[in-house]
Amino acid sequence: MKVQAADRAEAPGALGLVQMFVNSVNIEFGPDEFATADGLAAWLARHSLGTIAVGELDRHDAVALREAVRALLRENNGAGPDLEARRTMAHIARNCPLVVSFGTGHAIGPSGSDPEPTHEDSGSSAADAGPTGVARGLAGVTGGPIGVTGGEVRSAGGPAVLAGGPSGASDDRQGVGRLGFRPVLSDIRGALAVILASVAGAVADGSWQRLKACHEPRCEWIFYDRSRNRGSRWCSMAVCGTRAKMRVYREAKRTR
Image 1 (tube, rainbow, N blue to C red):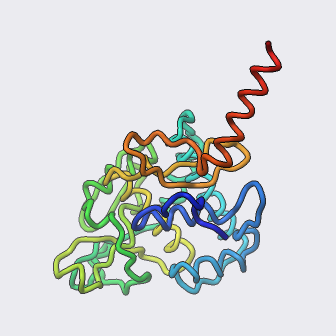
Image 2: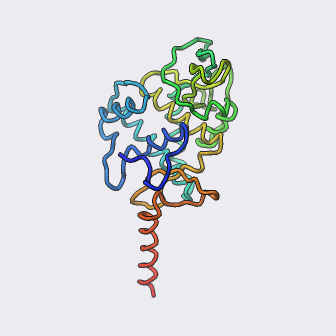
Image 3: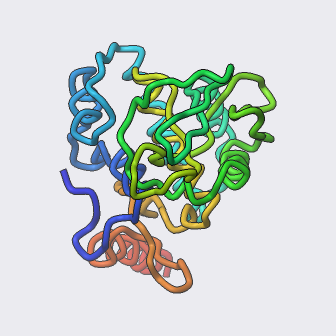
């Protein structure tokens, strides 16, 4: 399955994972890689998110998160706020804890524990944003206040929730003492935490607004807008842009 329109480059860094996650279904032509639990498990393994046993409820959560993220990406392309999408993301995030980790390869959990890493480093920009920046990023996505306390990321609702990307505290390239975040869990919740963390990191570093859902309702393919003024509306001007212009032309001709 394609990730990006032929005339566009893939989103950079961890945002590329978010792009691939939402583009796991081609709305207009199919297929949907999350149509079955086995399909979702295969997608997670292919994208280095773990070899995970996936059930139907897990698949439901993954699809719900995917479509909630798509709704926010419509907002990045001019749609109004989608409060239900924010509620969905906040609900899923509450069950997807992360821990603060350091360049030594160790992660500090909610009670000072030292959990084993559950996912490999993918160079997320969330590490660079730091806990405060990423917390602000998540608050920007979910609409709720987020804070980082005691090596744990909390929302106003209570339990530890997402706060950063799969930034690799265990990767020597990051350097000793480099701050990052790791999922606590190794099941589907850990994988979804990586997706959520990548979103929050992108909000924090300012790249999030460039990731958009195509303005063509039949398409909604996710693309990264590299234009100077962030004014691109369609994943492909030649295809979806032409469709939109032809609709406007036909409507104008009909009403004359």
